[in-house]
Amino acid sequence: DIQMTQSPSSLSASVGDRVTITCQASQAISNYLNWYQQKAGKAPKLLISDASNLRTGVPSRFSGSRSGTDFTFTISSLQPEDIATYYCQHHGSLPWTFGQGTKVEIK
Amino acid sequence: EVLLVQSGAEVKKPGESLKISCKASGYGFATYWIGWVRQMPGKGLEWMGIIYPGDSDTRYSPSFQGQVTISADKSIGTAYLQWPSLKASDTAMYYCARHESSWNLDYWGQGTLVTVSS
Image (cartoon, rainbow over all chains, first blue to last red; front, side, top):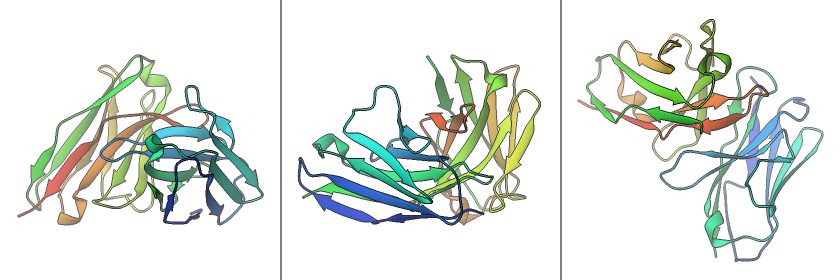
């Protein structure tokens, strides 16, 4: 199975800060990497597909990029409503797997 | 509007069987893979497996193969996840999610909480 190593596991930042989360794949997965947001008590929501494609209706402060097997998720200016846990997920080859998650809090 | 509506919370005893459901609407159910994701209390997301309702082709994560069965009834637009004999370690929230053609999980159900306790 392809393993996704996500870091950090948690972070605390101020409103307006730039926030960066990374995921590293254990092997090549091309661009087959998605990012999800899960707010407390809610189902996950797809934010970014295929490494960098922002989904319809998702604010432009969210972005994603790829360099080889390293993937980065960025919130350019953290907002109070961004408090959530963020997960990466690959779909390079079955079985799909998720990263461990990053809990984002407001400082 | 695409909607996935899951069945309600369940409380079961170890050894009991269970089948939970995910009713889809607003799209061609038979033509999209649909799958299940587990979230144990306070933990992350685990992809369990998927089914293509059009022909019932099913794929499982090795972690869940043989532990659960994923099925679907395309005549009523509903996917299922079932256990023959529950264990306490099956206690979790279970989400169904549609997989769009590029394998992104684009729509999710609201989740079904399964509690297994003696």
